[in-house]
Length: 532
Image (cartoon, rainbow, N blue to C red; front, side, top):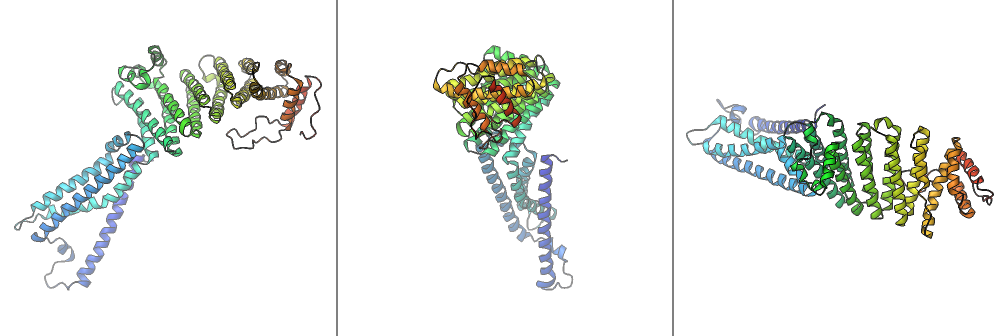
């Protein structure tokens, strides 16, 4: 399969050949028509149509070649003007790296060089004709080159616009970031600088696109950052130790210069400075998305989860720990800006990352259970923080996600299960205000839902632990929680959400367990007849 540059060059050659063939055929038809049918009939000893075509008159050629030189100079001027404007606009809109990439591209250099050579050749050819001497080969060559410069103009413009297509620019920069890291074509310092610059240019593209509400380009740049990071992870084992050191040049980068010396040394010791840099760029994009286009923050969270799963597959515990830290950072940023939907989406991706860790504990060097318990603790912390900030829905979401993790841990027989269950029961501390009471109602529902799961699996002791945590609740509150959960008849939520399901939905089997669970509290008021 042809590479992208080769495919573009082949398309350019085919287009030029098609235009040249059509122009030559058109000229040949009318030239022959003039010679044989329209013009005066050729007399005895007259030149044939081909000889007549290449019969050069010195006086005529002097004028023609002068005009030809002007035409080629005009073509060169048009090409330079159009290219300069288009490249400048692209560089302004996306990143300054566009201009550098453009003028390093071999096809662009060849075509622009051809235009310059054609212009110079036409100027000199116009001066070479005298009354006594007509350099026929030079004139033919000049006409051919002039024809080629005209033929290539439009296909070249098409190539330029295709080259500057945002998706192609993003793909090239992402590829350059990876190549700078893994290709030993320069010194370590130069490769580090080039890799960092590529990551920063992708960030610039994403941020500029967010400012212009361009979701497609922003998503493409975010995905390119993640792809570069994921492709780099399997290649790390082949890199020299010097690559992972944070040298003086790298230390001067703004993202590193603000860090404490010990933190930088930890990055170097953990061999994760590039991953940290890439994830920090994603964090910068996340913060910008919260301010300008909140729905794109979800995309950043998804790509960050993909990076975490790639680290899990590669057995990179240090990178996985970084991803967890940045997930926590995303949650903090969403709460600080009171972006409830963004926090809801980040929790969804965070939970899926934890589920992936639980399904593949062997891929986590060290104690995978400790890592999962740590994540559970983060869920509890941000749930309680959200409650104190009056963002009760985020608290409920974290509780339901913790419940899902408990279910999966129980099914997998994970050693972290009991600790995750204890963490979940610690979310709903004693409420301090009426608002806290309303927020923690959703937490109680999540705990009840988990209890029905345990009962369905025959784990009554775990359900009893939840019962003991709830036994001092008022009967009226317990009754209303029971009735609300029994009344939910549809699995699908009534709005469009990524999770796609209603938190409070229970199938018939689990509703039966719900009734049994609430039976442990003693006699409660009868369920309304409308309840399913």
